[in-house]
Image 1 (cartoon, protein in one colour):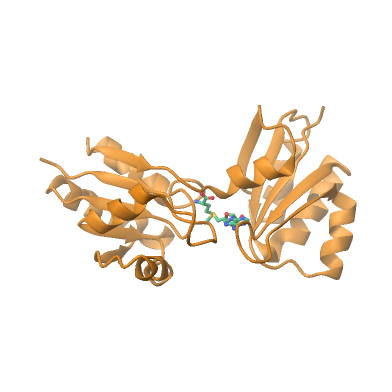
Image 2: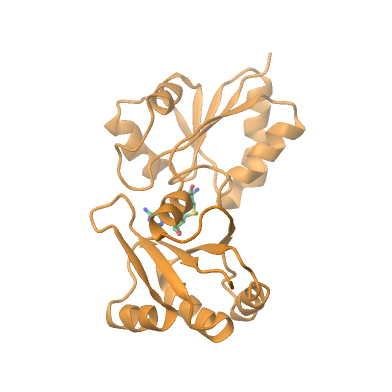
Length: 224
Ligand code: SAM
């Protein structure tokens, strides 16, 4: 009988944001596949979890994914976690989930935190209908083309962005989408958590004066 792949959501900052079932699953799994074992070990240590870990990340996801599916087929129960939030949302989890499905390996989820859900709710922008775009391209020309394609989007647009590209992305948004209302969820659930709600131009001024630090989710009001 094959084992089961457990997709386990973990905190996006505050270590207390984890479910009882997530802790139980991580304790009982035969192996925990982590995006970064050193990062996840802090969480495991905090909860006294001693289950063996292995790495599963962007650059080993093909080879390692096949190996993990082989272990699942042989009967091992594997818990998959990413560095934060829900595996499969803008992280390599997507690949192994598909590999498990293709191989008829049972798969289930232990739901929990997800950065964009928290940020969108705090933004105050419409949540009944939104478009999650994940990360824009790191390449300027492609990023601008992606934004062009969003010009007429009526739903709230939700993006992930890294601190080093944040100002560049805001500049492109101002150029292409105009001076829209945006909301920025920064360092959610952490000590310096904040949600800023302002026009793109104001955000550019703000982050020119205060260099972007930490983790960001960006919401852009749709083109009503
Ligand atoms: N799987 C994760 C999830 O469920 O949200 C997302 C993984 S993605 C590689 C990481 C991105 O999520 C960061 O670059 C940032 O945009 C966003 N993020 C993660 N933690 C955050 C936090 N505490 N506050 C704001 N954004 C966060």
